[in-house]
Image (tube, rainbow, N blue to C red):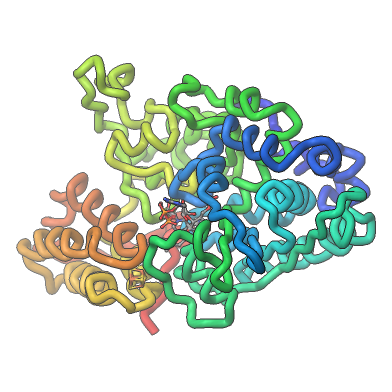
Length: 464
Ligand SMILES: NC(=O)c1ccc[n+]([C@@H]2O[C@H](COP(=O)([O-])OP(=O)(O)OC[C@H]3O[C@@H](n4cnc5c(N)ncnc54)[C@H](O)[C@@H]3O)[C@@H](O)[C@H]2O)c1
Ligand SMILES: Cc1cc2nc3c(=O)[nH]c(=O)nc-3n(C[C@H](O)[C@H](O)[C@H](O)COP(=O)(O)O)c2cc1C
Ligand code: SF4
């Protein structure tokens, strides 16, 4: 197992790490005290910008830039902070480790962030299935109030702060930030058109910063060591502006599934073989890996980086396997996939890619909110066509139909759920076309059914 320093997860292994007593003894709230008593909001914002934290919710938008886009507060307006703790992406289970094992880190991050952006109120929107996370967050907020870290004068500062936990009902679409805001406001959880982005018009019409749990949990260490030093933990050169340390998830056919902390820029090969302990069944090879939650296109070991031009940002990795490219927001875009939530699902040669994609398409068809025709119809048709193929009622032209449906979904909808369905579907067909054509001619044998290691990640939910 590689020995990178644990920063974000350094309190995970302490007994009763979620209690204030243990967390405070291990350093919790020192940075909130420092920020509120000796730093100005602008100084904090500058450190967060220098830290190059790319949003850990999946899109990789720079947190410092987002905070900078916050609309100036007008007379009578409030500014809000909303933490996205919905974590609905199949294969993704990193934010819950923070909330369950170290909720005080998230609360400390919220305190610093609220002060920096001029907010007095924060909601943490948590999916309701995360029962333990909700209980621990609520207990931690009570403890922080009792110690005067929240409330009318936190750390003696005239800047009232309050945090509320808001359980969501467990709809995947409510993780999309504008849908989340509608749900928070008591409306139907449907995405809004962007722009305006929440930073301009968010919760209850007020400028709102929406950030992921892990993004905000990084803020106390950014304040502790300074933005530049935190950014330099990354294995990438500073000009790539993808800084720090992050939580990597790994599941599926590996020996040691779990959540591991490492600097930005380790490779997928390290994640699978060093952290994940290698393939679960040594006699079966790696067939494909979904790199960052189910809405990111699958990678294969045999695919090589094509970046001959010396000016190409990936030129350094020209000819290397996709597994040997540093895991970062822009490098992964460069090889036709996305880093997403940085939680990989590993599939060995026993997995039918037709069956894996069928599972996923059923999930997306079930979770589409239905506002946009290309998404509502497209997700359903992808699932239907794959059902027909699996049942032996397909024909070779169905494979091109999958491509055609996907292409018609892309870029034509209100939110990214449709793209996050179509892009993986296109990658499955492009990289495993022969397998799809074979299934379209013969159907899938019973043995193609996914085993538990994969099925539990690529959650199947039958259409309601
Ligand atoms: N964590 C999960 O469980 C999960 C689930 C599904 C999808 N995802 C991820 O969600 C991603 C898509 O998210 P998205 O649709 O929010 O992406 P997005 O690119 O629209 O936005 C990313 C963030 O940047 C902000 N932003 C972007 N441009 C801005 C601007 N000009 N001014 C102010 N703010 C701006 C947005 O408000 C948002 O907070 C996918 O890449 C996928 O990986 C995550
Ligand atoms: C369908 C869909 C679901 C999403 N679910 C989540 C989620 O569960 N958690 C999350 O942090 N971001 C999720 N996102 C991304 C958010 O919209 C948003 O980009 C993120 O909360 C911003 O925080 P960050 O910049 O700190 O990453 C989702 C996006 C889409 C399109
Ligand atoms: S793309 Fe799909 S999930 Fe997103 S708003 Fe449109 S119908 Fe709803």
